[in-house]
Length: 93
Image (cartoon, rainbow, N blue to C red; front, side):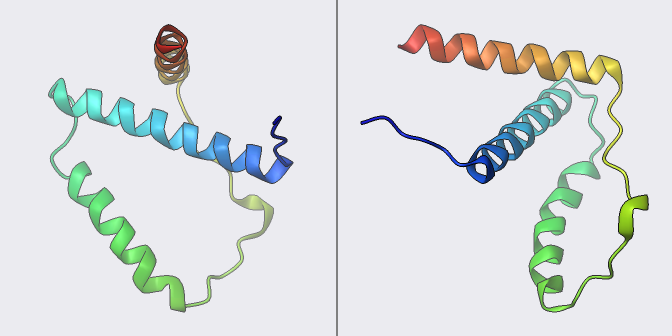
């Protein structure tokens, strides 16, 4: 039975994959001793803050808000990590 994904599903899947890649990079940095100790609690408190502020309406920022800036080196590391994950999945099959 072939499955077809909608554009929204594919976009959500891409967001999740990017989050996973970012978390894996952060984990590698922490394990290598390059991460700051304050970065771990910040991510833990961010989810608590998001759930607490969900009741408040957020102010609209318009088009001036840009995405996160990632250095070329970080993009290369993310691409290498993604390639490694894909290769791992191929080997399992």
